[in-house]
Image 1 (cartoon, rainbow, N blue to C red):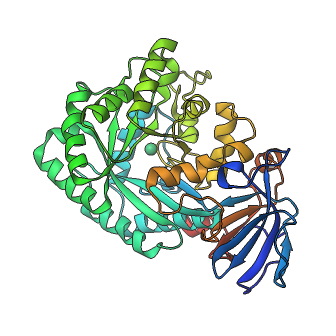
Image 2 (image 1 turned 60 degrees about the vertical axis):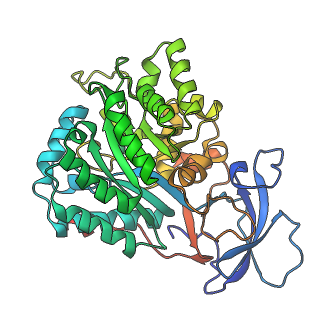
Image 3 (image 1 turned 180 degrees about the vertical axis):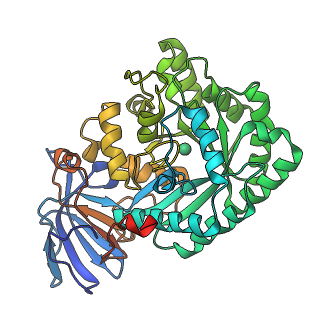
Length: 431
Ligand SMILES: [Zn+2]
């Protein structure tokens, strides 16, 4: 809970959360003339027992909490983060740099990590996410030939300890060149098998299709998802997404392939962009845009002169029917000194950069339903009868109010209960 502007139901497990505004993507009700689905929600024993248009809930004796047109989302989901690296800037200064320099700086920084310091940063990050209303998250975890064994051990413990609060998926992430070594493949495949997802970093490496093919064939046989960093740069010579689409089709890959970044699409000419996007859609690729890191890192080689920044063409891809999400990506690490595990902050910034109108109403799926789909979660986040009462209620009544202030006042509801969690103070990290 971040702000109670309403009377809380306390320990009451049976109440009506009334007069809320739900984005159409999260409701089966007909939107009104203002574009919102205005509803009363009956909550009973941790579940949504009934949803009715406002004023149409059958008479009941339970408490009615009037949300006064506050916006209601299902619990937030983030399908692309890097918990292992998060908040290292609390301990180390990183000079602003480009992507490849940031990779090198983080590799150097990692040598100083201990199980205790890693655990403290991950705990802080998950506490922040939970307080912000995140119910599920996927984190990449760097997996290189020199990665210390303790990192996976520490990260895996958080899957258990945060189950039911922030349901966590981990994706072992490696540069595709490391897969040239059979011994490395064996090691990362053992870890991926436990998680059911394999992460790949592809950029400008040679011979991408030939490198991707055996990895996709192996993952397909195992029934894993693949989660990629692809074309994280503005150079039109980057052709990773095209290679991924071709290999996905050629290997008849059946599970999900999630592509992060894909900002080079904007540098292509129209005909090439259409060809690559059409092929990606035919292959069923999912996309995740990481606007905070792209804004920080792209175009940095210019001695302080503002240059072009990378941005996934979110609106364009969505118009074509693609499943697109927003993710926090790097939070206070060598790749991005800014950020927070609050999907609403990412939505607000991403909507401004990507020219998405009415973000709170029309783009809610990017931080709820779409990442839930990409992660294969059991509940994709529609606020309907029998769904879990895992919700986020905002004091804002419109997209404008939702995005105007730096931090959006909200009540986080889990299993029907109003939470008391607050964002942790940074002194908990390095006080
Ligand atoms: Zn990333």
